[in-house]
Picture 1 (cartoon, rainbow, N blue to C red):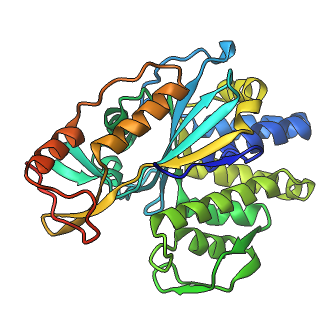
Picture 2: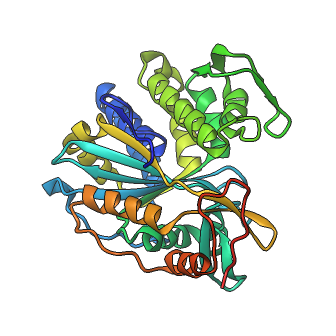
Length: 344
């Protein structure tokens, strides 16, 4: 059973925090001019052409889901898009006043069928091969969960956003120096500028918990951005903040929908449970993957569908079929030595 963390007043992490809290609440607090600036910036982030919405009536406070995607290689609009190293499935239920965030590790085994390549791949490559739609479809299939919305952020844009809010305060859990992110940090409280915050959020190799540790630090940075953005001293740089946001974010949530969320779903955003897909490391054709068991996939599917008010269904997809074939041939889910997993 995975460990679940419950926070009564935890800000909705990552993009949703910046969207719902900063964009709407800040605008509503500081007048018509800033509200207008906010509306214009959000219009620039809106893109409903890539992923068609699965209709949900927000005005009637229906539960909904959103897939949060973060890429830190390549800027939005470039041909070299990179991969979505951060993937979080969020379900929001205003009737139970509850939000669940489920992190999916970037190296999760997935199947892609594209013009460039067809076969087994890591799930973070779905975006590379088939854009946002590929990432959304992959998560939908993995858990049999409808996804209503998506939000994609270029994590490289974090540097500009952090500088626009005057830096962020974090609490470094342990001292570390990382040649990949080019960051050096000492245990304890720290105030970070944009460049430092990006290095802090990107580090993975020196963290004893790997990707899970990186996700926590990225969430910490986003929460700190929200805190700074909601402070009065950010007003002098508000134009820079909105420009940075519009340059590095794409979503199929419209401004009017965000206003509805801020008005009708605020209680659910204050009551957040964090979860993640548990997996084991395995080698597929001499390459390291993360492989989830069928039982774990079913657990997450049941959780997400339940939060959306949907009945549970038995999963039958690429991963469950490959799992069955591997188990038939003696694959050991309890192995600690990165066993070989065969794609049939």
